[in-house]
Image (cartoon, rainbow, N blue to C red; front, side):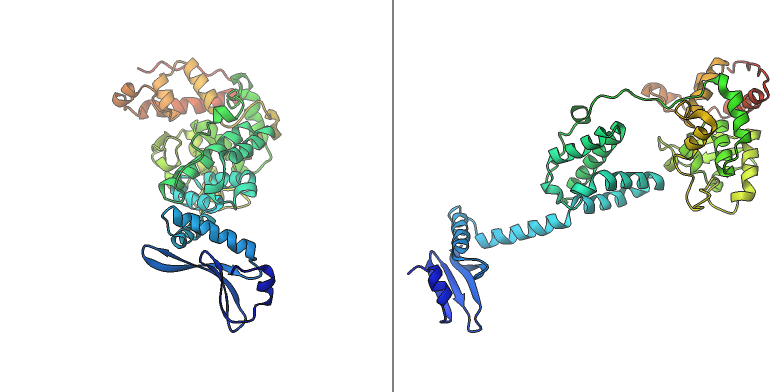
Length: 401
């Protein structure tokens, strides 16, 4: 005889009260009411638990039993399937996007500069984690990631949107490799098919004609000396601003007039040797009493254990009247333009800029570092800058063979 809601409400006799098809309600002597289902699989009698009455009513228990019988009819064990489902749910709850991203960033940390890691973490915390961070990675749909990056683009940050998309895709690739998810649903998310086309914006470079005025303003700038001297070093060495901001005293051989930037701090992950002019050595001499006792040559004045921030240089230049018209990175382009116009060997210039040879065949055989020529070039460049500040005309050098 099948159970009814009325009978369930009035049951008092302990024992098993069957409903049919293996489903029954077990009433214990202590008054507990538990839904169970008996079934056989692989020649063995087994049972499933469906919860407690009345939290699980008769209709709910029958639905659960019906689903279990469908699994049995398909030849599978509903008990084992339930265990697998629970394990999968536990795995997914432990592998949220934010949790896996944290492990990915930890794995990548040795490949990144600290400020790069901070920048990547901040972008995810600002634009991805608030909506998707607590979700199981396996359950996030491509359209949800697409919506997140398009929201970034909508506020006018197209470049940032592209970077965030690439970071999310990298996290998913890593998660598949390390068996945190079974498959990568983000493979077909192509930036060009999601984001609007953008013109490449090159960093603004100062025209050579504006150098005299800028150099005078830099000398008169009342800002922090760490910033002023770091800007001078950027100009005098034609290195990237990030390479200067992260410069360590241990990288400099002052007696030899040489700065050796380790591969891990270079964009191309190749050690870069920078010959230092007399004027560049004077910058180090000026910084010695300020930071010579620290690891960093140009630390943040607020947080001495950290380098100057990424925006420090351009903020200083903006205060000097060059907002949107020139950037610290643009001094590399200025150096290249002037040196090329003045007849210096282009290979020497490119090696000083630490540019990678694009022709692979030529790169394989053209391994010269041009250190002697680069030392002459950098001293000439420093003298050129001094001459422009004083209003003098700096003569062209003789072209080096």
